[in-house]
Length: 167
Image 1 (cartoon, one colour):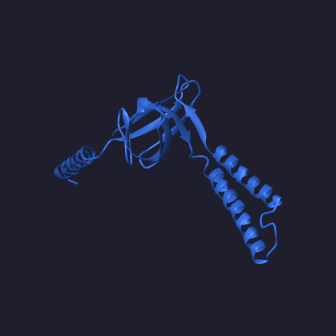
Image 2 (cartoon, rainbow, N blue to C red; image 1 turned 90 degrees about the vertical axis):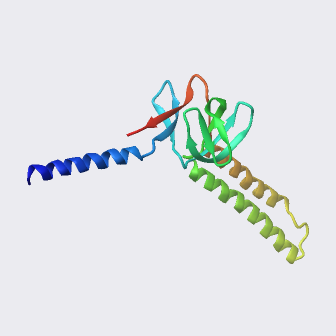
Image 3 (cartoon, rainbow, N blue to C red; image 1 turned 135 degrees about the vertical axis):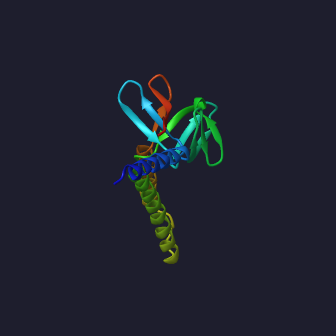
């Protein structure tokens, strides 16, 4: 290759790299981190986030934008310093699905048995044993849901940090 072609290729590569970084947007990551041990939970744009503010408002929505001092959800913008509790629901998908299955099984069992006893004209329509089985399904559903959700209070131990990842 001649010297001019090499120079032209270098110039093209430099120009393309400058233009690609010029129009790229900075990505920010929200970290829920423990200051004492190396434990971090990462949130990026598009993640589902649940938290409670210091005024007691509960938010459960998609993370649309992460700013330096605020979070923009689908419907509202919340300052990071106003957040009191963050609920970690990312790891609990299996527990939450088990919770849904247990609740549906309990209600299905109750309604099918009551409907069957009504058709057969058996009285009482609702037996005490069925109430025990249905309530045990519903209690296990609540327990599974609780196991799938963990609450982190923002204090000296846990904090939210915005990390800017720019090129």
